[in-house]
Structures are given as structure tokens and as C-alpha cells.
Length: 185
Image 1 (cartoon, one colour):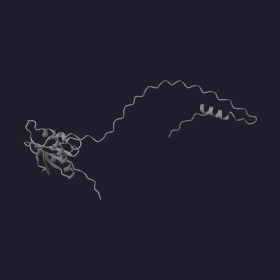
Image 2 (spheres, helix red, strand yellow; image 1 turned 180 degrees about the vertical axis):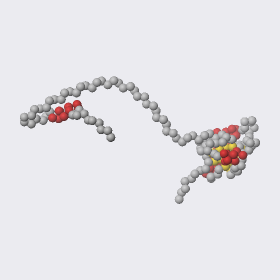
Image 3 (cartoon, one colour; image 1 turned 90 degrees about the vertical axis):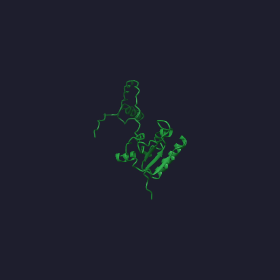
Image 4 (cartoon, helix red, strand yellow; image 1 turned 30 degrees about the vertical axis):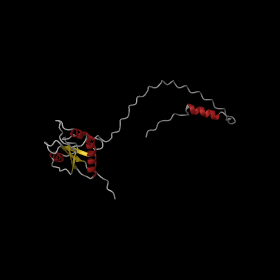
């Protein structure tokens, strides 16, 4: 620990305070009154300070964003063996949802309820049948399914999506994440 040398004597303000305190005191017989302190020199004027530019603090890093689901593309966090089995259709679906003949709003509500129920029951693989649709790029349900799967309420539940067979573009196999439940007494 480094000790700094203290200046000897009282500071200007302390000395002025001491003389104000002792001004009313009469000195002892044979002693003279101490001399009044000299006025300390006026401090030099301080130039106005430059404004300090403060950089905004960086935002704390939260959880990393979950990557978007794309039907037929291998997701991160899934080993090759399981992805290949899902893509080939080797993993049997434990439940199936057929969306044929439903309107868009009905199909979306049914898909959300279906995936939430399957995840709550601990099911890992489900099939969603949208149909191919009359247009070359597919029907509205087939086009909307990836958007629905990436919605904030479904994305944390779905790990990957693939067509069960290259020629069957009207159905999608979904691999759901395992739901870890707290063990209670």
C-alpha cells in the first residue's frame, strides 16, 4: 500500500476556520495574540467543461434467437442420423393432422392446438397433411405452414420439418422438441 505524504499544516479553509474559532479567546497572560491568517489566493477561473459524450451501453445478450424452420432443410441441433430418418420417413408419426378442406383460419387454429397437445403429451413425431394444392407452387395451406411453424408460440416446440417422401409434397413430418418437466414429489 502506498502512502501519500500529507502537506504540513492546515489548509487555507481549515486555518480560516481555526482563527474564527479562536478570535473570541483571550490569550494567556504574557502571550501575544496569534497573527490573523492571510487570505488564500483566489482560485483561477475554471473554463467551462466540454460536454461529455457518453456511448449508450450495449444491450445485454439474451437468449440466442432460434433459427427459422424451413421444410426440408436440416436444422441446427439435430444429429445427421435423426435428420435422415425424419427426411426419409423412417420415423413413424405418432399422430396425424389432416388439414384438407379447412379454411386458413380453421387450419391455423387446428395446427396450433394439435402441436401444443402433442408436445404436452410427450409425442416426438407428428405428420401434418396440407395437400398439394391446385397451383404449381402449392395451395395456401402448404405455403402458410412454414410461417405458422415459425410463429413465437410454435417455434420453441418444433425441432425440424421434412416431407416424408420426395414425391409426397402434400404432407410434412414434424419432429417436436422434448419437453422437460420438473419432477415433483
